Length: 174
Image (cartoon, rainbow, N blue to C red; front, side):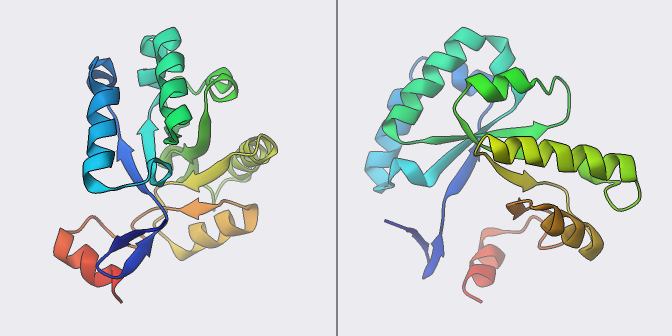
């Protein structure tokens, strides 16, 4: 069942989650009630978390993520490439999507070394059946290079800057 927004179909909605939100012992119940109240299928929600959140308590996060994925919610690793960037977290936790941080993308058009590193990461993530979002795309050249490299999704000012709800609704409705 697709999510609708004034006639436009959304594949999913991503929600950035903080460490304090994951620490809330009522989080599972709160999300469950919210999904029920708004009639949103759990598989339409992607929870975005950073490695900092995961590393705070790996055992707890692994258990919590397992509970949520068994319900149908999905997880994205946000800001990969900043801070810790531990591949083991990606291997052992139920992520379906990796968001490459803009710091990895900034020099994609001017640095062969940067381009090769990002291409290698994409190859590894795709081999693990993970989807990739490239964040921070600001130019057509960056967009083209990343599309040619095989990124699954592109996010950044090249497409749109943050906007009020009414402007977003107009954008979706064409």
